[in-house]
Length: 235
Ligand code: C5P
Image 1 (spheres, helix red, strand yellow):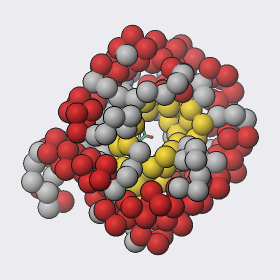
Image 2 (cartoon, helix red, strand yellow):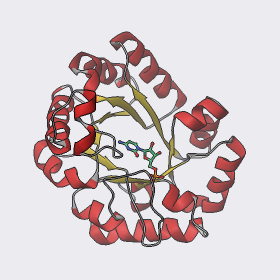
Image 3 (tube, helix red, strand yellow):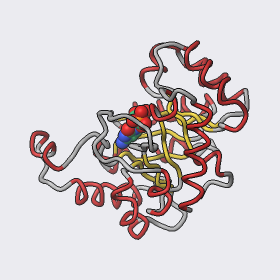
């Protein structure tokens, strides 16, 4: 579990511009300490935005979702480490050689942890056959979690539905980071395997990723406080 409850709630900065992202960071203020920078914002704003967050004392989860040859994955993980990121993601389905390359590349950076992505939370059992996988999501998540742990990854990204079982499969202290989080008045999104912050904590998640439930809320500060309180209640 992360040392501070506010660090356990990672706010996903899925914005179209650096200025919109930084406006939300300013609005949330010092209480929000952990931000996810994903492919949209990185491509739009470049790495300087992430560097700026680190310089401002924030933790940065660089959600690169790497799925590449080992040499390229290692290069990208090192770049994430130099940038000051604390979390970086690699697709577990890239295989154990790639996962081991990512873990080795992160070693010189004591604050950088490698998370393996199991199955993205917008997929359900029915989606697996079209990509050549047999249902179920649960089996696939367990298989990939075991692979990631054996390769030395520091944790996984998975939905709340799989978290309870993952707590038993993964080594003690492993990170379980769960997206697909909804607050009481969140609208419907493209996410399928969704849950509340409280349910995430009760299932054993170490962190939750919350995007639109905070960023698109009429009062993002109140929504962030609700997420922190909910996650704290379930812990
Ligand atoms: O807006 P919402 O809370 O659904 O955003 C979820 C965030 O979590 C997005 O930034 C998405 O990229 C990320 N994520 C996910 N599923 C994963 C890994 C990351 O939804 N397996």
